[in-house]
Image (cartoon, rainbow, N blue to C red):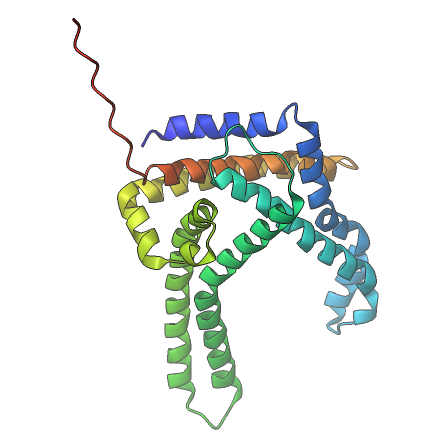
Length: 269
């Protein structure tokens, strides 16, 4: 796998999707706006005072505004996810925002695929926390066995979490390519996909992606510290990360698909 070519292609794809396509870029910004506005709704001084006091005063939270912004952010998140589904499909040239109903539905299905992969890990970790809590706060049950079971469940949860990350990413691409939620969570099929790519090759690709995204995120976070306009800069630049990452994983997935053999040139007469 030529990682440099994939990185270069993903950067070019993100640039082609947004630079000069100001409507697409603006839609990304609008869809991210509700969650970005949460920082202006909640007064940090009041929240800090509540935390220091030790007693939670729920009245300091502006619940109507928070609920409206969160609901709007979740609904618009499905639209952005639907766009990324089209990127996962390998759409070339980069897609635009249209067919809003299909876009929203695809985004909703993509989120469902992601949640389904993480459900086992969440259940194991939640059970571990419950056992640990009851083991330390209940005098009727032996503490040692419950704490031991809790630690074991945490280890199992961490293993399931690693599996969810490794399989969930390619599962998202597989869902986009097949249009089926069931295919997006088919363990055996995704295992075959990883084996076709190569376990080492796939994990190294993920490491490269994580490093690049972290570096770009650090730059954006530093720019976000600029007074007054920093949060706007962050809103503008975040779509580049989303599209780059989706295109990168789409190209990685393509390496699991057998390439058609190149026909030999016809002999000269």
